[in-house]
Image (cartoon, rainbow, N blue to C red):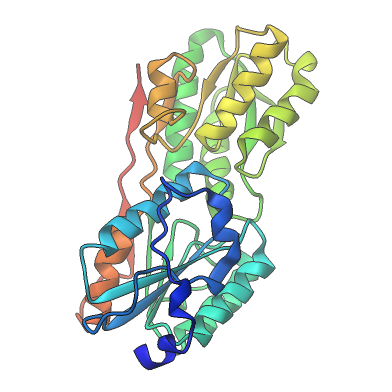
Length: 316
């Protein structure tokens, strides 16, 4: 394994930090393996194919993977960034497999385009799918929260927020081809359908991105005079919608998001500041992925096929 990796230019190996380095650095993809100079104690190389680094949540995932991997001298991790391009992610995985990685971790950009390459990887090595499912069970393990349940929790919270009066809701969706966006919409819609006094009056697609959500809501904000709540599939899109409404002077709309990250502009801080009425924590699974990867690489048996991470409701 290491003999293959030594043929790659180890002078270019760098320990990337999602905190210290800009996300754009990851655009170099798998031509820049992540790690220090090779050491004799390294036994396993893990490839991590990330869907994008435009979402703060994914930057945190990568950071959690790096922090957990740093505890284990026997492993190194190579990161790639698909930049929300499914075809690029397929090529990223192909390159990682060409490096001779011992295990693949992947958070797919979209389900359908990534299914074949995940299945191909699974034919030779263990594969851990994180956050976004594929259209197959040809992988070793899936780690993620229950997005449909989170959608239902958001729907129930908004129903209680609106009360007997009811009201109008706008839904801002993530990338349509991703399973979390589909499940968060499905669960939410099923709950809202049970309330005759609540109507989803508009659906906006913003691909998980704050700026796109702000732009899309800005285009529509004149039509939102009767909108009571905007439900976004993640906190950055909720923040983008809030900014668009604030610029227009519409301060009556309430906002609900998902992710619940700590830190500046994280969902928890946005709730504290009163920008969001609620967020729902969505663990990245990065730490857990490394922990289970080590177990798989060491041949541990009897591990579960699916690991469901807990989500909590965060309100003022």
